[in-house]
Image 1 (cartoon, helix red, strand yellow):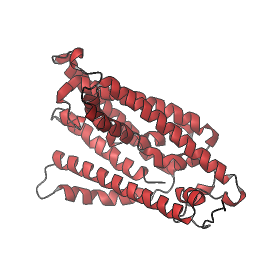
Image 2 (tube, helix red, strand yellow):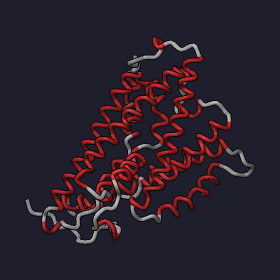
Image 3 (cartoon, helix red, strand yellow):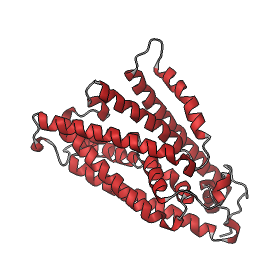
Image 4 (cartoon, rainbow, N blue to C red):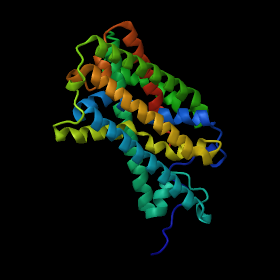
Length: 308
């Protein structure tokens, strides 16, 4: 089989810093990994655990996390193997890899699929944030579409930050916001479980409805949505040889937090668990502050996950 010929210039030009040594420290890389993985999906985990059962949901999160981790390492190995060849020293984009594997059609197909994925993800994020802002701030004359359009200039401004190391302060702020919001939700869950008529026997370990398993599996996959950031994260790190270890450590903690968050939410509300766990929170100022921080975090996350 003949060797496939590829263009020397990719459809998406890499940033000037992509061919140089990364500058992100280990801590910055961990923060970037977390903000690239943790998104809106975590808010639906308690409902997914309600649908699948708390034990089935936990197993699904572990399997999905392991599969995503393995595929991310496989992608890096693929890039390194191709980059080791003389003519592929500048292979830095997914389009380059697609071109090498399938020729020009592979490049166009890869870039098109990435474009569709990012468009769909952006729409989902903007609609989610817009709906929640509209429910929190019921201002006269402002619709969901109005809030979405107000978010666009912010997203454009953040998108001008070209490198992941420069974006690290924003990602760390988003991580702190996520952590605080999730801690508050867990606190409310524990109070609900302790103060209410909680019975562990009423919480299913495995669902009787097998039709709910695909939904729970899809939610688990959605929770590990940062796969597209793999190459950018690895290239941004100062000591790239340590990236697999850093990635493994980050995935371990993320999976653990996901499992605890899903279990606590389901245990607290049982069959009353809503599809977005924040809808179960009381309507007080503390809960509103938590939701505002979540919206800020998701706004940063939306920009970050598209820096491929």
